[in-house]
Amino acid sequence: MYNKGAKMEITEILSRNFSVMSDEYRKFALEKDACRACSVYKNYKQVGQSEGNAKGPAFMFIGEALGRDEVQEVRPFIGRAGQRLRKEMRKHSKVLNRKTTIISNLLACRPKDNKFPSQKYGPYFLTTSRSERKVHAASVVDHCSKRWLFREIKMLKPKIIVTLGSKSLEFVTGNKGITVNRGRWEFLGPFKAWSFATFHPSYVMRCDNDESKSYISDQFNEDIKKIAQTSHYYLSHDPRLKMSEEEWQQEQALDVSINLKFSEPGPLLVPGFDLPGGFDG
Ligand code: SF4
Image 1 (cartoon, rainbow, N blue to C red):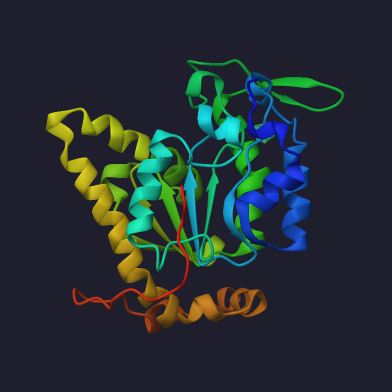
Image 2: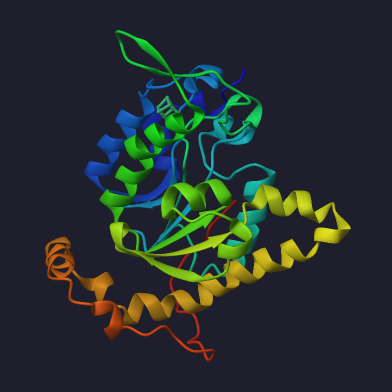
């Protein structure tokens, strides 16, 4: 049987994946489960679901797409690469855990043979009940992320968004180049959240087998540690994160540079903060 997780009812999957979930999110997740809007679905016939806090997470980690294990379990980051991420998160489980964090993906279905959509691997189609339209690979990712991931971000309003890998970085923040953008904080106005980019754990694992790139693993570990140890400063001190949506809209319309009232921490960073629980694997 291919889809192990799919043997479970979607309601059971949601109960298992989430520590807490709003009614609005439940509706969203059920709608997402029924999505057939592009040809990526046809490969493995399973839409993925996120995991963690689906009501008001402080953190959202965003990967790229599902792999084989993620499709079978209908859980994100549950395969070998996922375990690499979860291992690092568990080291900082007082901060990064199922009660504080949600893990999601840019593309909700598994691309064929784990090949992230590109013109090399197409063709790709956007589908409706009446038609099927051939599109560029990037349009499929754009369509899926707007339909699901960006709605998920807008609904849950995480204050810290962690992008894993170059695709997630590019689609969520608009920045290109994981090597130059990783390891630093950046405020994302459209999401009223701070973002932090690091490598995708599957890339980290590939580098572990390459002596000339073994430093990538250390950088990844340092990045997760930095998120856990410095996020407290942003969560506690940035007044924008405490604003209601209405206040934030007014602030932007008035063009009052509240940015100037917030200064990033210096090299002496505040320690992490305590929250209960852990991100199990
Ligand atoms: S990849 Fe996204 S848009 Fe396409 S069918 Fe899956 S959930 Fe829907």
